[in-house]
Image (cartoon, rainbow over all chains, first blue to last red):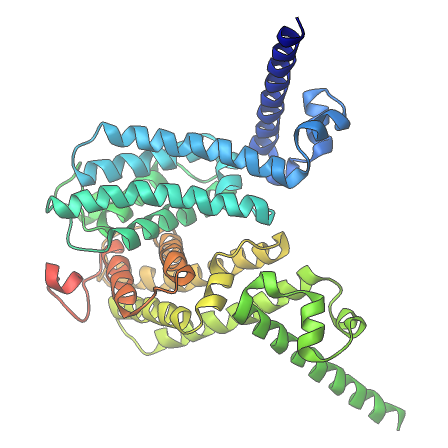
Length: 211
Length: 211
């Protein structure tokens, strides 16, 4: 009987923790990490401040966990998209477009993940987030170079540069709410040119097609 | 007489402020912004903690000012390099190489400016720093497109992407102290390909030349 109660309590705690994290992400989606305070989360989740502190010992550890969960989901979505393509150019096109389109659908969240000035604890998670994307790109470029689809280059360096390019190029449009399909297309072209890939949708890139 | 004394005091204060900023940058060059505390600065500059507080009201405003001064100098050095080139490819090659080589010469400072997790006040300066570089690149790409040296593209987007690419690609090598001439060359090629520029030093890029 005592054992069963413990399991029940543990389950209830896990559920409440999850609900708090979901509510916390909701706050970030609306106002970035600046909007994520223990006070605001308590109000949003309809629980006391003390309850929030029972699950998260400080604002920055809570923010770091929200960041980690949101970005693991983002990276997984891009990784999944790569499974369906065979050559390097198609993979990169998919990855860049998936990354950019997800950002367009949730611009405030994307801005918070990519560029919002945040606490060092969250910034550390951000470095991990970028490293995870870079690892995906590196694998893809390495395979592309090996297959002769891409010119010889350092896959590590090009992968990091792609992550930086995608993130930085989206920051402005995301902040100004000006990101649209045109931005996505421009970004894809930039990335494909950067690694020396032929554009899979337009083998011969003319000036008209680029813009 | 009173007026002269005021001028003297003002001059002395300005000199002490400057000396404190130089000492602060020295700390950042050695240990990043994490090493820049009021306590450490007081010890390094050989003045009391109270004296430091008379010039800088908090650690984060001090760090933000150190960041701003260091990056204004970096951007000015790159802008200066651009003056001596005529076509877009040569300008971009100069800018990328100047940026990367300055980073190699002071890797810890460069890492602190580009990627170290920092206080939001410093992060805000970092966004300005990147915007300043982007403005330089944008001008260069716009002129290159107008002159028909570069394919049609959004100069704003490509410029932001270049800033992100350069910064992100250097982060890993800088942290691992593995940045060298090879990294610089790879980065320049990536940037030139990305904007669709011909390599000014090697019109025909073969696999051997790329790696």
